[in-house]
Length: 72
Image 1 (cartoon, rainbow, N blue to C red):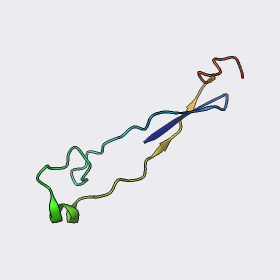
Image 2 (image 1 turned 90 degrees about the vertical axis):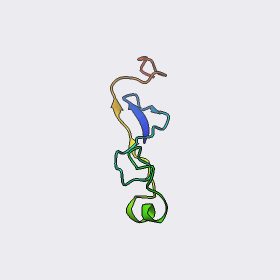
Image 3 (image 1 turned 45 degrees about the horizontal axis):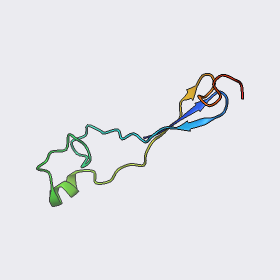
Image 4 (image 1 turned 30 degrees about the vertical axis):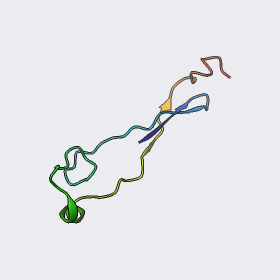
């Protein structure tokens, strides 16, 4: 998922992307996916594609680190 903090001063600070794993055993990318589920049967029963990254933009109170509370 992609996180961008939005501060009251209007500045936006993007953070490094974070990978959030699902716990669905029927998703090929999940840590819960069985190691022995492979080949044609896996392609028929399990999700084979990742979804688009989620955008998460929490509104942060106060000024950003660049403004440092100086009201710039």
